Length: 511
Ligand code: IFG
Image (tube, rainbow, N blue to C red; front, side, top):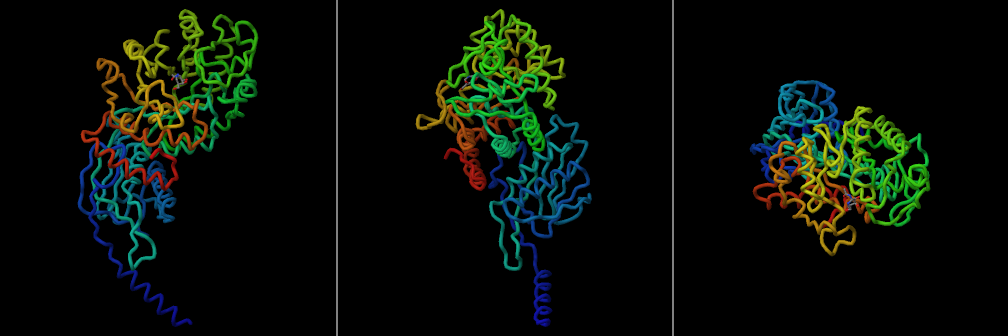
């Protein structure tokens, strides 16, 4: 028995040494890179990743990115590759994750370069965030399947040679999830975060309160969730995030370089709060809980001092568990608040946000209350209001409903969704030019785009995936590059391939 082992091990040894990395030439143009990087040069020789490949880095940021790539490869191929802490970019058969502070001179902290040749891969950025974005591109360069070659037990992976220089045009690339009309578990929100991060989306706006539900625990006003969180559109059981749950979501998003922006809509869209506390109502009587789909019928009581104590407590507690710079105050569809009261209310509330060291974000409607350049206005339906906001110096995030509202039906065969902003096909979601929105006078104040998914008709993670994908993939490219590709057919060709990656993740996207 002993001899056979010696012979076998000799055989393996010789085979091992006889293994020559195959020369593979692939065209990077065949990889489905979305968002399309700023510059992609083809290089003939592919890099072959095999069991001897090592991921090198010598910085915490690089280690983080290397682990992100290594765990992603392990999850799609059950192949683990060693991550070594050493910086020697001359090492062959290696992927190097390099932090180069010179990159910090560039316009975006998310800028990176990715260089692939037959010897090694070099991913370089000035920040961990930039490396993280580059890892998403590296994952998209990976072939769908590894190569099985005779001499090897494990698969090898041929990555097309290329020189990529990449940096986003728009800094704010967001998705909004309405967890108020229907409540979604922490697990579901994390799943959505996972998918958003694949496309370099960097902001998650959580719509945490509305007429039908209050979804975030406020310890000083416990009935907001006890009563206000107890139901949903259609009368379901509702739900809410404890502050620990919310911190869990924020931490998870932060790991994927996604900033969470919480929204407490006010003074309208507040029936859940008004049903929880009689004193918040001008007549001192609590309203009934509401499980319908109407909007514009509720308002906090602008004349009562207790209203501002309430707002102060809510914003204080929310700011304390929100590392991001913004608190979103909503401000939309306050049809039950007089114009004068609306302005009075917001002018008293804006300073409360600032008192807790946060900046105000709001739907474009709040521009009528007087805003400044520290405010982010979210344009959704009225170009005049959007332009009026920009004219006051505000930064603008574009969410034009006819192109970005993911709760709109794809077409009249779509069971889920609403129709008031018109059907939004996969093509319509992609074929618009964000930087031509509003007036080009304020082009430089447009900081990004965001894709809202309202949940009146959406109640499961499968529904979220169906309505968001593939339309939000088109939005991710518009956010990253600020425009569509010259040849749009190239985008749709890449999208078709990219959807195979979503198949591997069992994403319920619209076919
Ligand atoms: N408009 C309302 C949302 C939601 C939406 C559904 C905004 C800013 C219609 N406000 O969009 O609360 O009901 O498409």
